[in-house]
Length: 315
Ligand code: BYC
Image 1: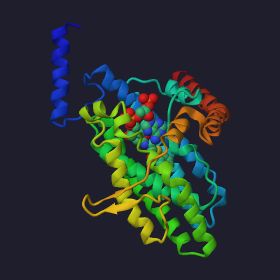
Image 2: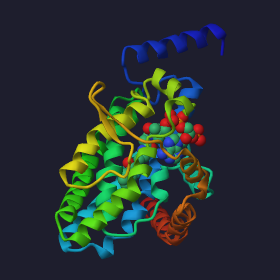
Image 3: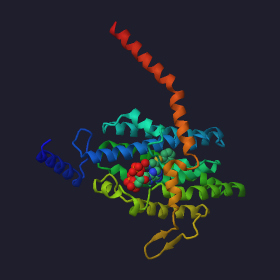
Image 4: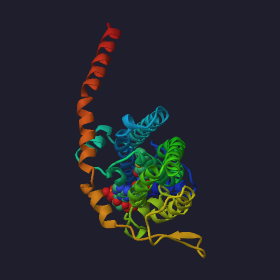
């Protein structure tokens, strides 16, 4: 391509970004923009699918029929989110199977949070309240992402995440107002999920190699630290409301800034989990690999059926 053509394409792309006009799949886009989106959206898709595992673990042990039906619906929603997101990745020219193979080989990342175990029913409350709560905080701005298919997928995802967050908070409220044993379970779940939930927003801005470029391209609208702070500011009063204690001795409200100050995040733990050394990384990837292998016969049967149908139509 001639250099002047490339410059004109780049200028047209930048003009759209500046005017908040969405970039659509067939529009020209810089290769790095495409790669950044494939990276982020595929990691997001993997997070939704792997995210089904810690909660799926409790479907058969939900304490009553209502809770079971709600949890089942939530886990199914996460599958749906993964499917929209894999479709969004395909609009960028990525091969869906190759993307999923990268998850199974351990090459692709997914959210650190899903590498922690779910030890009690209260963890279903903590995940809905904190994990989905953090996800909404991060994903509502993504509804204004400059890439059309991702932004549109996020609108529906966020509606469902709000329901997920509320069902989690409802579980926590019920347990926190229950017997001392139930309240202790809720507190224990909060103790274990609080810090990993803060890590979901990614490294501090000063250690986030992608943030600035993604914000310039209006993929991200807020930095990792800005979103983390908003999450803390919103969530601490919710914990107080239900009588639970945030496990952070350094947490305090700063009257001047109007924000909560919080203690140091253990970034060594975060990077270990991201590198694959968290408590459940190996189990999560093995479960996804097994699901692919065990479901192979279904895909083969569907393909064989399609072939037969086509042959019948042709004859
Ligand atoms: N875990 O420069 P940075 C859900 C990686 S699921 C693992 O800040 P960026 C739900 C990052 O990928 C929620 N890795 O990156 C489902 C990068 O590595 P690479 C999932 C992390 O992209 C079921 C490196 O660290 N949400 O809702 O600008 C049940 C440097 O980071 C993490 C999304 O995926 C992490 N926590 O910002 C319940 C949202 N953080 O790629 C709930 C979409 C960072 O260079 N994604 N890394 O190898 C995003 O908004 C952004 O990608 C992030 C990171 C804020 C996560």
